[in-house]
Figure (cartoon, rainbow, N blue to C red):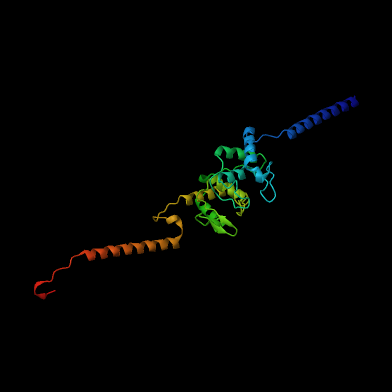
Length: 265
């Protein structure tokens, strides 16, 4: 009786083990779908576009080519969307700095390329909501981390070996993407350096400097107090010269008075 009981327990344990093994095998063999997975048709379209427009530098499987372009495995949809939406890719020369220009592809083609590059894994496109950020905090963070290169008004400049772009066309999503990517010589900020809430604040501040309230009148491109003062002096000098010229012409046009009888003045 005891032997039969032990055999039944052993068979039950074996059946449970087989069931667990089968479930584990099924889970590992079939990848779990994600909410951000792109449709297979869109990925296939992006693959065809990539082969015709990008593979000459990045390789047929986006694995990169040494000395020409890096691998795109793991960069995610985030990097692909940023570089394509801002026209920084494709580059005219592999050694050139990626600068903002008009996108080389239509929005539908960009979407397909982003889906294909994103299929190799990596971070997804971030969601940036400036309305949830703080303008004062954004100004503080921008002055601390960004103004040294971009200037406090986001007008850009020049640093060693690179041109710092102006931010007057950057959208909130592109701000969030650039923060996480660190394009070219720009440092990359992870969640440990800048949280999602802080990125919202940065985007809100950048929006404010793109459309400022010039309470003092003519903004003159917001080029700073010293150049603005020089412009004011030049305009004032031109106005004084014009007034002097008009007064001089008016004086020369007045007729001479005839002398009074008796020789009096």
